[in-house]
Length: 368
Image (cartoon, rainbow, N blue to C red; front, side):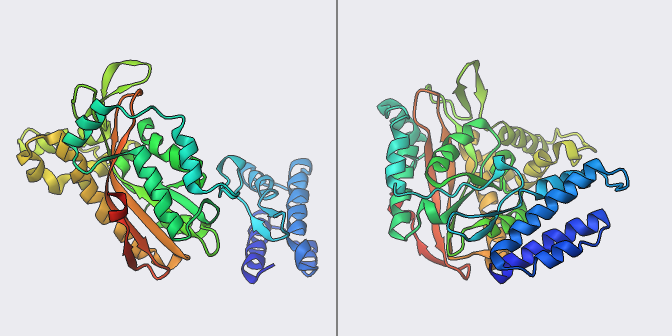
């Protein structure tokens, strides 16, 4: 057991001891045993405390603390190789770093077999409205190959994303999940990185030792088969719906200000809708730009991107001390189409940050 892992074990035990107001002499004795047994003993101790907490009336332990004890029984485990590791309290949120012999490129090819074939008319329509956009199939194939050339593989990479809450934003995310494993979610409405510095720091701690982070972020926009931007066909819904709804609501809010018709809303920053309130505030600097745009809906995702780009790079710079072997930043505009056609992505940034948090390679040309 490493010194760091030993410290983490002691920290878990001390938290539990403090929460239950007990002095745990037997666990301190166990921790003096061989390193391979220390975590197992901590696990056993947590089990015994959880059992006592539920059986003994003398231990007046709050329900939340009892839950903590029960959860802590799963906090430690041994890997097959004998290396002591920690895992998250819930199996549903356990990190899923994908090992195995299959390369990222091979996994992308497997994923793409389940996706629609390229539609030439939709392809032309998207690229006419969003010059520089490429299909998700092309994007994922080129990203996988670029990362492989850097030694970045599914086995040593944690995927992190800052994408909109909309289920259509999951299309791209799910594809990368299949290749690189479960993602750490940093994003919220419109794709803004609402997890902030705290979320980035937590994510960095989950990156494999001597491993990498692939961070993907950006807003999204819909386009219908008839070429209407800001709307999209959705599976099972007859209504051609707005996309992105949050972005359009923020744009309408901004337009009401610039047009002079906005009424004062004292509840703008209330907790029940604070993310949308933040999106509306973060788009304010782009009022003139959007008003002067030939197509407001086409310009909107790029305005949102420019705001998000500043925030994400500032978060990376603030948390660069947590970068391990490196971080790859892929960002741009997601372009969602109907359920029968491929989605697209306009890549605007594809960079490699070294372990010191410095951009050392511009990978964007590899996506052209």
